Figure 1 (cartoon, rainbow, N blue to C red):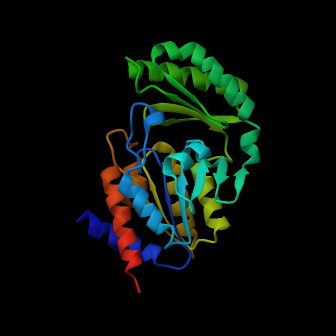
Figure 2 (tube, helix red, strand yellow):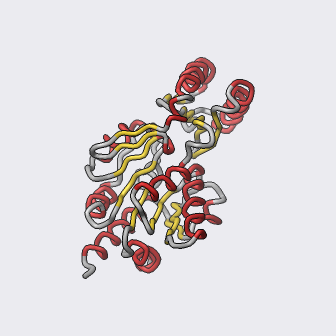
Length: 271
């Protein structure tokens, strides 16, 4: 049944001229794991993306991970890799960094050092990236207590010291700090559509930052002359807004992999 729904809702979008497909990584094409460093892409999803890159104008992966980490975990040429929520881009021949992200790098490094001193002993994994900071509390003995402590500290620190430079967001068992305003998955979707002259796009995502991308897809669609579909990946940890914003919901990473494979099969057999 879900296979038929994917074909009915998504194939017409991808069969149009200048069509693109974009996926989040963790929780979308890679199962969520305790240690983010242990995440791997679903084998069937990888195989489907390898085929789809030959069939579409653009296939992209958009993640909070650093772009080189994302590229290493997927290992496919011919893909657009967009890291740290849109701060850095990597294709086979080009690397590009948003100037707004570079300005925030020193502040991110400072907060990362402070977070290690305050929260490492509480079981928090401090993932310091070049342009963003992810504070994972999934492995903390008392995750909800630690979450509140993290949020209180980060919100206060950013509001008092870097209010025009950084913003704080929440994800699946993590708190994130990233450059303000100009760097978001929503802006990344707009840039992707513009740079590759896309007339249609299907986006897959599961978490709170993916909502920005879904809003962008809907806004482009509402503006006219663009067809877009936002596909949400349901889970017990997904934000409640996902069901309101997504045009279609899939029940997990396995379903995403199956859907991508079905789309690749159908597009490959199209006349």
